[in-house]
Length: 362
Image 1 (cartoon, rainbow, N blue to C red):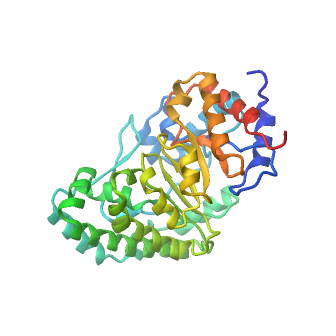
Image 2: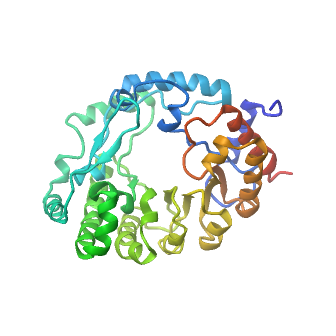
């Protein structure tokens, strides 16, 4: 791996970035989405405390960054953490986080029956969102953080997509069954979600003076919906979010869904989704065919990056670039996040493959 100069690699990557269809750059850029799941394989730490204690999180991130800078040439985790956050849209609908020492937090629900869901719909429809989205004294905390990091904080710029919010609020099993058994109640839920989501984002954007266009969603559970169900329940939520917060076609409309949801790509294309990161079972050529003007972030399978040989990794880099990189509309990244336990030598092999096989300047 002596052909990989880490400092030069990341300098060239900065010159190659920009999510637009252009080839006047050295090569396709690379993105390594390292998250708290990946962090578990780098360091041993208390995951519960990591998510609840900002100074502790900064300490762990500093330790991880020191290792990452040595092994792959740059830091990936924030060393200046905002100690508060706004309520999540799922929490508005009474989902709640479960924290444990050894696992990233996950969302749970108390919905057990369709009557529970109907009562929840009634409660949420009467909420005064202005009073609950941010903790008391948040302005002072955010102002101190902005001074510390030298940049503005914005809330209300995106969030979980409608399929995943539904699974978190209703329960995955309940959602799958009730889509069939109680479609009218599920439609009532999604109509309320669209209304509340817009009010939620407007409040957060107004409070943090976020007056720019764009909306991002992460929606792993979208694979649970058939095209007909997705068009009825989920697409209207996305449309109202895009209409309100990304009204122009040039505004960022990003969707991540690392599931087998290729059957929904025509619907997302019709909604104007223009930047995507899809699951590892979806070939980049299929994305380009279904969504010809959409920027592709992908499509290396995370298990190939974790368990594959250097040649396996190079084969997928060639595939992705041949299928979707020639027009400049590709960032090389994993189809989903980077798995815990992915060796540094494999990350370096990926970087070298992108450096050598995705060039526009040769």
